[in-house]
Length: 346
Ligand SMILES: *Cc1c(COP(=O)(O)O)cnc(C)c1O
Image 1 (cartoon, rainbow, N blue to C red):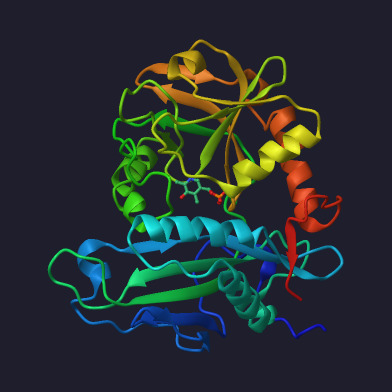
Image 2: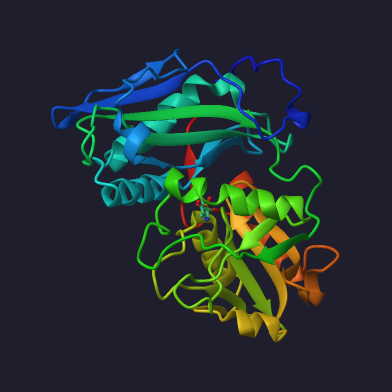
């Protein structure tokens, strides 16, 4: 079934919010989630004493729905978003939204907004943002007595408008995540305190900060919103791990690791010292996340010192390019989806 698409300039969308026809809502009260459903109301009315405003109980997810070559509307691995949001909620003493219901809610809200899903080839997608907040009143420090689960969707253009030019990072002088803290969950609280470092980085000509582990300032962790990947001269994909469980488990990263193995690329998942990066051990570097899949990194600065990645300094290097093209090929339906990652919605 095909729907009449909205009259948008699909090739020139920015990465910004515009309301669509429907959002999805469900409420948790008296110990249970209600049946939930679609709504045309894109606002939320809350008490001034709602938990979210005082003790920051909020978790979120981000995934894309898009049109494949054969015209189907699909999402990529929504089961992993469901699982991750479950873990994020549990860490903040929020009632997890059941995984099967999460997937069904994504399906329902995307299908209802089919007219807003950008056509194949536009480079754009329908960004799906599930989130949950403590909505019940709480004044003493405690979990809220009730919760809202909400999914908004909005059509967005490519995250990096200028295409895939390698970006520059700086080593952050701030920390992102405490050891064994909340760095491994997707919560707004991790972003609030990264805004100043991010804006400082932008003001000084950098795209992002690369954070080191805050316990020892020795190991590379990730940026504010993307995991990091390296490639050695012999073509091994090196994926930083955290001793202190403070790296967000990116779905894109986990998918790229599998893609690399499928392509016969050796994958080494281990802690990576910043000193090793500085020593010139890596020829390519990239950031990965849903929005851009892989963004190539050309340089990392630490004060006056510059680490340059010779295999991908002026344009994306060959290994990152191969990984990115393979994953986007699977997503678009041009390559075989042998792991069953592409979830058909309509
Ligand atoms: C969302 C996020 C990522 C990327 O995760 P994906 O599932 O690949 O989109 C990486 N780091 C942080 C801190 C994030 O919040």
